[in-house]
Image: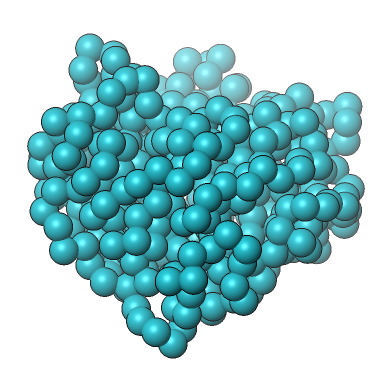
Length: 377
């Protein structure tokens, strides 16, 4: 069993919205967030479930033990807090899980197709599960419903914090698609972020939940692209490298507290080839929504930046970013890094899980953080 242990942490995207009309498949007991209650802190000392989700009450200094041992190989890559009191959803491998008591008890609610599945929370007590091979699923505390994907490869999914049926995705070539009926039908919008001759792989696509016309995409070799008009036009991000090219942007996140703040992790291939001490690996920060980036964290002796690390922007402080490195190799465990832009420093804490693969905040008490974890060995 995973016992309580010490780490440091805080983070993640937790998008709060006004209550939406009831959604088919949502338990009626979960309705009425706006008028019938509010989120609470978890009251348990031990999380009851399969061990794939736990929580910390004190920003990571102590993590709650779980009632069962997490058995490999498991990746809990999807985790979301809902706009219903004390409601969460998670996806561990292909199993969707629900908690209705602020993360104390987790129960299976259905199967989800795909591999390394991520979750995007939406108004109406639901979330949308997606993977990079184009699988899409509606997940609620009452069950799962497969949806139709507009493309055979996806690089990101965003939800509109005002309308739970309004979704956007980016495909593997940087083309955006829009749905107004909860992912049942789609239409392409705008133009691809890169000319077909330029882009090899789109690694990540992040949408601003307060304005889905604002999106940031990261790709191979040519850096990042940003749009503020729903993909009608795109601008190449500057500042990622001196030449503006030969940069892989593997992951990005738009701050929910201040959407003009964007963080990204990239690999500068020119620096890599030149033998730079950082190996060309950096965390970048943008103050203008993704138009221009500045490197703020370099890989070094005490910081490891893998390709596509989990990035989690603090929900109320745009100056704080959390990023993760973990591996089950030789039982090394997981490092959680906290970048504080005001102090211009990174602090590091450690835990024994093979990886932390998803993070979410308790909406009413942000110091309570939920961790989706992985066991690889």
